[in-house]
Amino acid sequence: MGCSPFLHKEEGRSPLINSMKFPVFNPNHDFEGLNLSVSLVFPTAKDLKQAVKEKAIKEHREVKLVKNDKRRIKFGCASKTSPCEWFLYAGSMEDKTSFQIRKTGPDHTCPLSYNNKSVREYANVDISKWTYYRARKFANKEIYGDNKMQYGMLWDYFTELRRSNPGSTVIMKTNTEGSTSPVFERIYICFEACKQGFRGGCRPIVGLDGCHLKANHKGQILSAVGIDANNGMFPIAFSVVESECKDSWRYIARRIEAKKLEGTKWKNGVGCRIWKLLEKTKQLAVKHDVIYLGDKKFEVNTRSNEQFAVDLNTWYCGCRKWSLSGLPCTHAIAAIISKGLNPVE
Image (cartoon, rainbow, N blue to C red; front, side):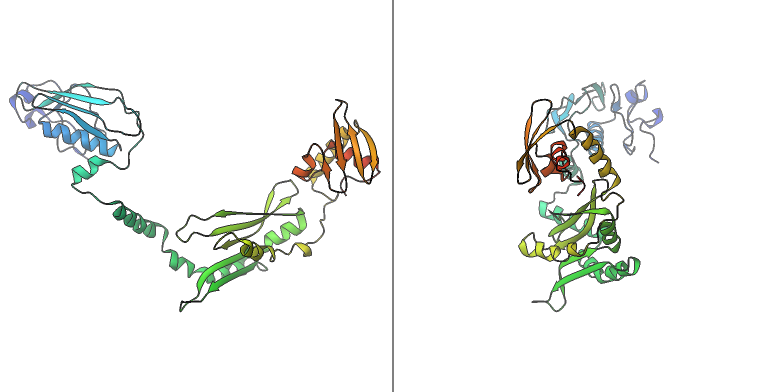
């Protein structure tokens, strides 16, 4: 708890301050919750400057002295990122020692500053950006731990994965060239639960993607996902590699046992949500006129006089919905039904 922000009369530094009816600033206050309002009196100009600067530091604001003489002191906003009309103007009292805030401008509209020049001036320190980077690196190490030590815990992590999820595939590749101990290079992880979920409840489609890792050791994370019964993404496996290249993609692709997947066990051959979408699409498809052109190619005419070319050999429709979603559109289903085929198949 800090002391009171205002002086009692007997604590005043001059008879004038003791006789005042205005609030008088207490230099021993910790500035917490201090309101620099009009009529507030400061025993000295130094007290005023210190109060303004320390409040600016606590609130992450940049301020500067615009006017500074024996009778007037004026502060303004020093932000360089955006214009800000904040200011504080104080004038000297009759004793020519104390200063009183006479006028203040609107609140700060500039963004918060975390590179405050006032901090360096007040604390009498000035560090280079490299010192700052080293300090940040040390702070990150204290908060998140040492990366090298965490890499050394990977074997324990693999053991726990295999214990808690038996059947999971965990493969790590290391490099021993030029080092007395193995150096991490790549890792591949596929949980047994994800294997079973993909085999028993996903469409036989695998999507691959990758993104950059922003940790100290960089690298790429490559992932394989499927499409579940609700037409949503389902994670299959992921791999952390040194870079995204043909070799790293082959590393994860050859480990996905797509050819050994079991057939789907859904009642209608597809998931419940997909089945409902197909049924709704079939109701719209019966309204189209279909002309067979031979070799499983069709011309589909809608009631709004639109024409679409459909090719069942390549799963193509002129509206492109079939190609983009993997589900046959109304035009494709109209063509499929006209040949007596099942849209699910």
